[in-house]
Length: 286
Image (cartoon, rainbow, N blue to C red; front, side, top):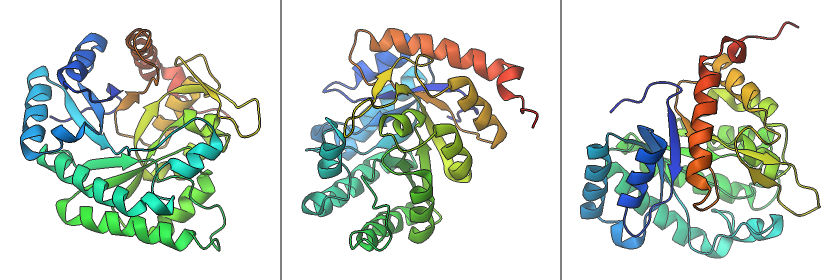
């Protein structure tokens, strides 16, 4: 099912019973969602068909499957650096293998996009780890390309300039960006609106999430309900309109129920009002 531009969706985890995720879509009132990686028992062809059936019957389109890996932790900056994504050497090959397995699962459901946090891509291109990161991303993209699939880099752990350089150095047409403005704030890596302007031509999906800047060195900022943080969600939507973004608006709220579902319902109402607002899309006079 096609998803219209700026349709509001949600980011889902997949529980032991995916029906829990389907019910969350119904409660929030959305027709599209990004899906986190399911438990291993669901990562089969039969599991893919069953999950697809559940979401199809609910009228919900899965737009992206997100890769996540055992051992990843987000306690603070140093822990993220050591444990997240494809940068840590000791887990890289297993995570690439897992990514390809997830890609096959998504493909079986007809989902053509996977995404992940790559990890802390080195800011310095002369860092000995940097060419390994580039080659790792190329391997994944090359596997996806014959399937007509793309890979979305989740923003946050690198500056916009580093992300742009990395995309260009990878040099594959099926690499793009899942832009999360709150992550730029939570990691302290730059103003999200300015970053969005820089990488905009690569942005095919977004997370609508909000947060507060870190208050201590080495610590992450604090995620808060949409509209209550430092992103400036009205400016975010306005900028998406200006750059010609055509994808859905995927709410992400990384807290359990309660209050996750209630916060998502409020965020949906806020986003829909901003999308309709002429003011939110108006260009500023300079």
